[in-house]
Image 1 (cartoon, rainbow, N blue to C red):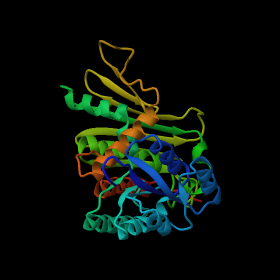
Image 2 (image 1 turned 90 degrees about the horizontal axis):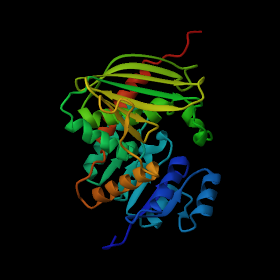
Image 3 (image 1 turned 135 degrees about the horizontal axis):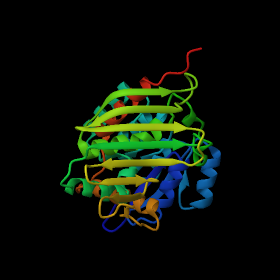
Length: 328
């Protein structure tokens, strides 16, 4: 990239999350998606129809090499992350990888080592942490005179996979799917970001069979010295719930529906709305891309590297390891 020209990006995986990157990068001055790859013909056709300036290639390596891209975004199912990251490393590209790093802890640990040895700019796409609501929450907690006493995370999905991911069969399987890897991981990363450590005290969960993803998971954890309760379910109630409550002795912050932050205290017992973005998802992705550009320029940024993502993965896999299927 020369001065004032955007970084050229190659997107590997053109499903739901890959399409979001295509959409959001189109409005960002620092990135231009020039190449894509997916094994699914419908995803390729959709990309070619909606983004005619993006060239889709028959293989991931061709997409990386022929496009002369600056950065590779790995947005495939987790089973293929390690292979594609190693390919991008081989060709000296900056890397943004979807979470988790992989589905096997040892493979992911090896990938962290290879990534660190490469010296290449890299990050994992915990995009939720760039949401204006999360940024506001982080500042408020840092400035609060009263320590946090408890955090409660509540997740519920009437349908899993969610409707916009219904075609992604892998999300319904135990091998690489489930809401714990896909959604809960965002909140575990947020806890690491706020408190530096996360420890599991107790877990109870359920899955319909060894091959299927979890349907319920409850856990008691500690983030630093702060106790955390986590309750996540699927089915039943049709309303999706994605919320987290952060409580001190005098106040409560509620982070709801991913992007809405309110504060309740004696002055505002009904809640003071702290974030009112017209397009909160767009603002979140734009902020994430700005952080990626800063990383690639060697500037200060807030994106998690592979080592931090591996710490999150270890917690997630420990939660899932204690989620049995019913006894026959």
